Length: 323
Image (cartoon, rainbow, N blue to C red; front, side, top):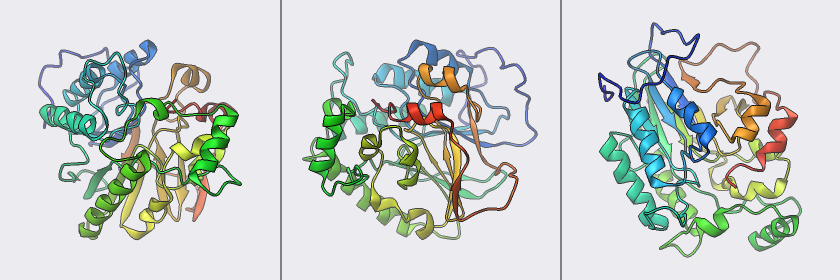
């Protein structure tokens, strides 16, 4: 186990957080610890079994010091932490002392994680052998390519123009640099191609938990209050991956709409905490940490497509994710 026997960052036990008799594979995303009210939430996250694993599906924060603080904290508590970047980690903010851009910034974060014992998309995929396993937990770094276009548009340029007209423009356009790739969508396509080869080489006898900051299919973005924002939420190139590869579950964040959906019989978990203005309104309907394995009990039969209901607040706030 990678966690230390004495936790210098230990927060008080959460009332009602009972110890479990077996380990769990848990997940969270969009901690956004740059917001003061989110930091205590991160400080409260703790395992209920000494062998619990934690997936962190991006958007820990924007500043490298904050990212390091949070991942160090969590790596000291959980037996294994698995991270993939969101768009916010890749921002080059003026106030960050680390002014690396694009690929260089991503590789800096990979090295930081490795120093902390945190698994990244560049490392061998760890195999969860606890209840519900064995499964390989595959953190993917794929970005987006503007193919979740605004309805009625046919090109990236037309879709972006519609977003600018509506005043719905992701901050990535100003702070997420693709260097040395010419564009963010070119970086996305390169990541998708390399990741596809790695998935094809994976032993299909060992199912996968696919982890990506952005949803692998477009359907979760259908509830966005502003459909213009969807183009910063993924790529059509991954739409069939949950069917093509042996997939036990898909974990993502970014939308700030925590819920469980099913596509083609595969469970998709959106595991974000989100911004204080969001979680104050809706609370944490799925809890702070989502159990991925063993699969929580469900009522009713599995359907080929479908979703749990989404509150109006969640849908209204969704377009703000990543801005």
